[in-house]
Image (cartoon, rainbow, N blue to C red; front, side, top):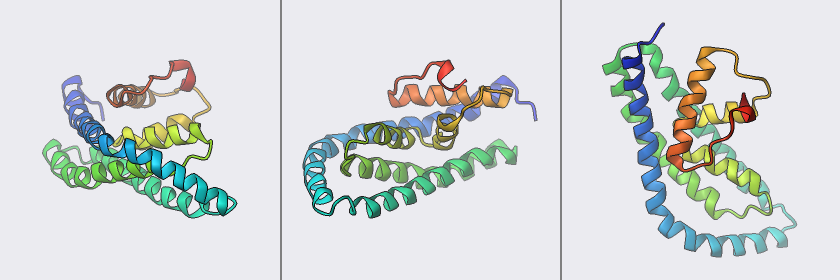
Length: 179
């Protein structure tokens, strides 16, 4: 299916709108999350130290559930374009957004409040995965990518992801990082 630039822009607007709504909510909730983060990180770090790191196992399992749900809702969001009826796609994306945006917000708050125990790069990856929803699956794919972009579809996905990263306020990786 070949998308005309006008139809393509309309689909991107709805997706970027979901990303902007999430960005506003994360910013609003950060006023509460950031002060709590200092307390929960200190207490959680002490608890992890007292349990010799065993507390990290259930904390990581909870994150894996969040990650699975984020990637699944991102996949559903992306696959809705197959329907090819713009009104139907928009009507179905509303319930997906109603599920996905609060899920990404709760996952972001969870990652913020759980101690990172020195894994700052992993924490950054988790936060970005939350911040760029509904592009979480694309971000995950491109961050794991080892070969250059091969198709126009990969180029399109990369450009959408760069726009989502700009909205989330994340430093945009150089094209050579993934491409």
